[in-house]
Structure formats: structure tokens, C-alpha cells
Length: 231
Image 1 (tube, rainbow, N blue to C red):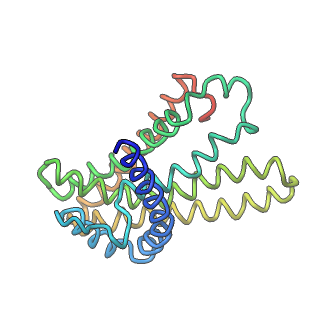
Image 2: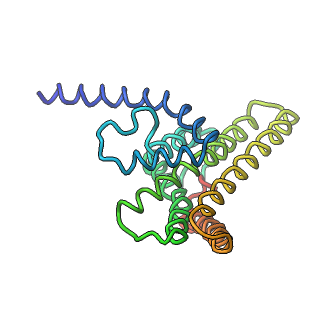
């Protein structure tokens, strides 16, 4: 019986992995194209107690984890990129991956709090889950572009000529800027419909400050703990 349970667990894990591989690009496309409409729909799914939720789209945390973990996992396991000092500071792969995901969840967390305050939402576990889930969706496209860009830039420095890397930098920079603009526009749209104009502006600026501070804190944690492989 024990072996059968293990086999079933492996089967479910493999099935879920392939389901994620199919649902991730579908979810990403729907989010980028329909943004607020998509978030409203998924908020309804998050609030639902139906066991059939997320049949056609990924759940927010799964979406964030899958989108971020794949390039980071490849990045971590590309040991040819690392110096001896960086390799010495690197924890086990699973621990390193978890550390990165937690650090970069600080920015969705800060915007979730901002949106709750702007909408005068009462804090409960379920309410925070809805707001944080929306932010997991919103930040994932930007993170996907950022982490894949970082991985490919490092990889291309090894296998491509210098002039090719220069052309690649331009394309990646344009894509990164476009994804950041998309992120900021969606954040504004979410705040503007939750509060009046002046209040929305104030919380929007506060959100930018807090998320920037979260990014700086993440960087300081990386530096203070000597994680040179993340720098």
C-alpha cells in the first residue's frame, strides 16, 4: 500500500507539472491582454469554495512560483556562471530557490497592502488572500521577463559574440521596460477604481515607494548574508 501511495503521488505530481506547462502560457496571455477583467474573474474563483476552481487557469501563487522558479532553477544550476566565492555562498538548490521566491514576494505583498488600504478593506485572512493573489498575478509577467532576461544575458555572454550580446541587450531592455510599464498601468487601474483620484495618486506613489523599499531590503538581505550568487 505504501508503494502504491508513492506511485500515485508521483503520478499526480507529474500530471500537475504538465498541466501547469499548458495553463501557464494560457493564463499569462489572458492576464496580459485582459488584465483587470481577468483579475476580477480570478478574484471570483479565489472567493469560491468550489473544488473545481482553477480548472482553466492557474491559481495566483502557483502562477507566480512556476513563472519565477523555472528561470531561477536554470540560473542556479548553471554552475559555469559562478565564481568559486559565489558557489561557496550558495545554499542547497531547493533552499536557494525558496529564498528567491520569498524575497521577491515582498513587492506583491506591499502592493496588496496598499490596495487594501486604498479600498478601505477590512483585514481578514480571506480578504488579504484575494488582494495578494491579484498581486501575484500582476507581478508575474514582469518577473518572468526580468529573470529570463538575466539568465539569457549571462548565458549569451558565454556562447555568443560581443556584438550579438549588444543587440540582445536592446531587445531585452525594450521588453523589460514594456513589462514594467504594463505593471504600473495595471496597478494604477486597480487603485483608481477603488478610490477617488487624489487618494489613488497618493496610494499609487506610496505603493511605488514601498515596493522600491522592498526591493532595496531584498538586496540588503542578499548582501548582508553574503549570497554573492544572487548578486
